[in-house]
Structure formats: structure tokens, C-alpha cells
Length: 95
Image (spheres, rainbow, N blue to C red):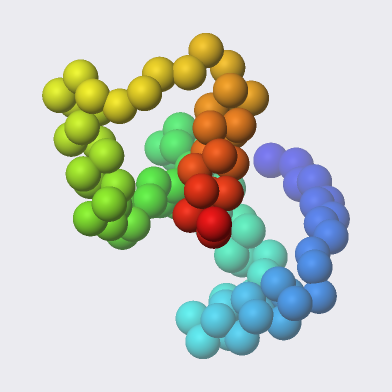
């Protein structure tokens, strides 16, 4: 089996925050990256949770979602049209 050198650039703050965590686990950065790559190779998946399950919609958002499910709400032909309408609503609230 051959080996390949792998160089990577990190933001200074990211490095400063991540290295102590790795040290707490007794890992070097090289070991951590190797573990990450091994997990990807062995499972065919990235070993990270990329969902936002912890972010629950608030009451207003839930009400809007219900309204849409029940056929309510306003439909716009373009994003620009929707933005114009939102701006009007914002302007009306400040008058």
C-alpha cells in the first residue's frame, strides 16, 4: 500500500478551536482526518449530521405552514413579486 501526502489550509480560528478538542480525544489532526476518510471509505457516507433537526419552526411559521396546507396563502409568479409584496407589508407596519 502506498501513501499520499495531504496538505490542507485551515482558518486560524478553526484550527485554534479544533485542535484542543482533538487533543482531548488523544488524537493528532492527521489521525482525525485519517479516521474521517476511513469512515467515508468504509460506509460510502460522510459521517456528519447535515440536517437541522434541532431547529423547530416557531409558532408563526407553523401557522403559516398550516395555512398553506389548507390551500391558503398567496402565490407569486416571481421572487421579485414576492419581495415587492413583503416590502409593502414592512412599509405599512412602519407607518
